[in-house]
Length: 197
Image (cartoon, rainbow, N blue to C red; front, side, top):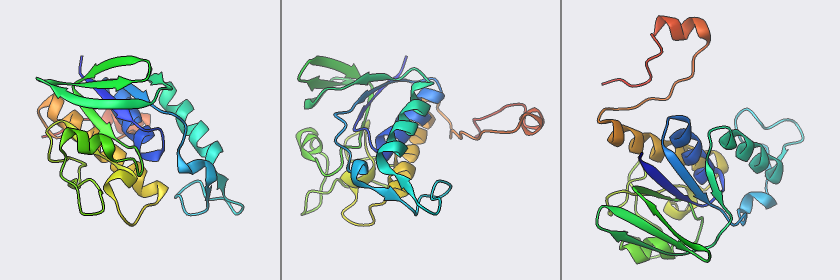
């Protein structure tokens, strides 16, 4: 089974984990719970910005519960190293190692792992990634703050994570992959297809 390692548990990492796990990939999330979301109050996140906003910690906890439904392996460990070993990546933590086929870096302003892997970066250290999160190292994606010097918002980061996961799913399945959820009547009309060419 294809294994995706997600480094970071903020909106980008959680979104990548959700889309990948929901669609059948094995996912391990490395999260030290240091996301800046704990200092946030969301008024500008579409669909959750009630008049008094949403507490960032409550948002992250709700997102984690949503991701948990799909069997993600949570590792509350600090990633200390990341290297490519042949066709796989080896994630080293303070508690051991984990092999993965793909890596999504969603580590906020911590960009050292991208540097270790040799990902292209800008002068300020921001990881260079295309609109699908692909970096210069095949199999490595960057989502959220790690790939953005500016325009950092929770909702943008979540979109970055989703784009990375959908690109991985497209590569794994060999065709463009779409994850649309339907009401039952609409699903019947579409024969439940999620993948299109």
